[in-house]
Image (tube, rainbow, N blue to C red; front, side):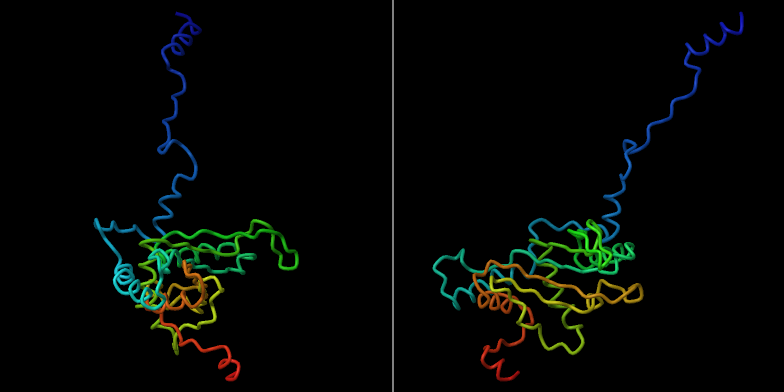
Length: 241
């Protein structure tokens, strides 16, 4: 048998270069995004069937009757309720050091229990060396069970750890039933280990309600247990100032 015939027989028998085995996960890049998201806040425990947060139970049993008695709503659907809570952290230093966003994402994941979204610049500003699309902050929107659990931890654990705490200010209402308060330190939350904190950062927490005005929103938050300062009439506040 000649050398050329032996070579052709080898090719026909499949003796050429072996084909590489297919990669796990379909060979697509970025397949570990879901695992990375879970590792930031840890695996979320599975809730038992029929689980209702105690803050939601308190709202149904105590807050709703109190608001109905206070405002005499003709329709039960008019009773104010909490629809969502938004936590926002601005990271202006990320313009020069984008890696700072990763640390803030991790901390906010631990505090809220869900992965935050990254807010990006909408337009370029040359004076601040800011370009469109650059990450400049992190925010989380919580609803339903996550919202009630966060509110419970904020009232019971976080606010009592604020230094010289005398109640949350009542100046954060926007006139449409929503309330925003700023916190100066993220270390008031027990989920944050102070030894691993790179920098003390503040955050803004917005309570979005269905209240028609600020008075109803204030009474709703007060009945829920949010430690608010006693509201003063504008005339008295002007005289005191």
